[in-house]
Image (cartoon, rainbow, N blue to C red; front, side):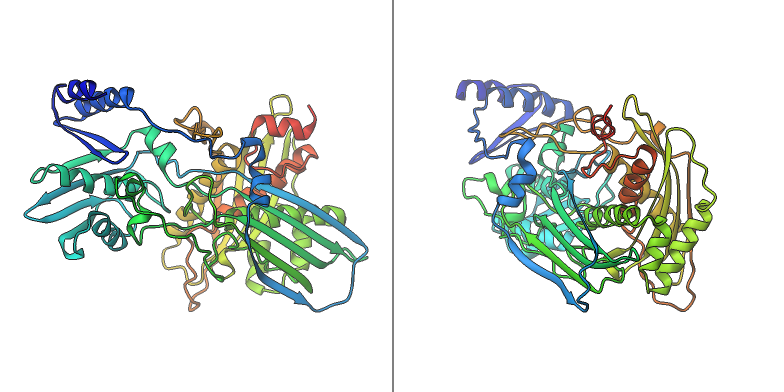
Length: 502
């Protein structure tokens, strides 16, 4: 291998090959020279590989059999009514990625014993601490400066690219080094949103009211953000590696895997358990809405299933089980603006409804949608969405609408398309073909967001209120259009066709 490395070193523009343990990089004068050298170096490098991932078809069974810590989030026993009918359902969410339009980037410059890193990290101070520890430098000799990136939310690859820039800047003191990840590097190395499994069970009384509720969620950690050197992926591969800190659950009311696992509905008897799984077969961290996306999808899908069993309208069923006046206002407003009571179903189309209060302490969002399902192909498209949001006093109503509109579009992509693929030793979602997402022609024809202003009320924040309700509303609309319930994300053509029985 050494002669070949020397050959790479002699390629045009190459300044230095950097190796530290199994961390391998090449620095060149120009971007394309670096790409050519990187590919040449990768072609001759020998890597040890292990089959350490679960079989893709067994990932949810893997989650359930992996040791977990059972956290009881809610245990309410207020009534002895056992109900007259019991329903059960299970829901599944795959690993999903951030899918930033542009891969992560950073610039590092070691000059006069001061390392400066320009980064689109969401947390420059924790990143500074982590980089200083990784390089064994005093904190005051590291400076991280935030710059806008092409896409960064949650915990994607931005911090790791910054760590790369720091390591490579150290290798060529006095010269700034720009690190630009490639698409396949971003897709395969960024921290994913965890796969999750939920199980719901409920009892209905003779009047069609929920009198018993049991809910369980299995999930990995939802945040492994920088705080120490072990949170930076490049540090794992150094000759003196850093180990990641033990994953920890995020306590309620914010929550991680159990965010929004406690429904806002009137439930006289209810038990909610969060099975926190410390071991992670793939790298995971914060993806927008954390566990709320999956929990609201599961709960609001199950609420619709209960409404159907009770022979009740889904909106009326929700209102019957809501005491919170602001929640009721949001539900009523969304249904009215959508034209729920006068809806006329066209062939291949259906309507769906969902509601949640983000984290049970943030914005209220009710959402009604219409979808179109092609029974022959299984192709599902979100046609129209109408939401009503209460974020407290509305300082910037247009900003609130923009946030909800963006959340609806992003969550529809998650719900209809996105899933990380892998085999037993590799992530295989290396590009947009292997990780498809919503394309511009699939954007809904109409998205309406109505802001319920509450002058003088506390600002609740709007952030990620749309993600969970969007998934559930689409699921409920697909069931309405086809008569078939899909409980596993995403709603691929094959999965929808299988549910329909075509």
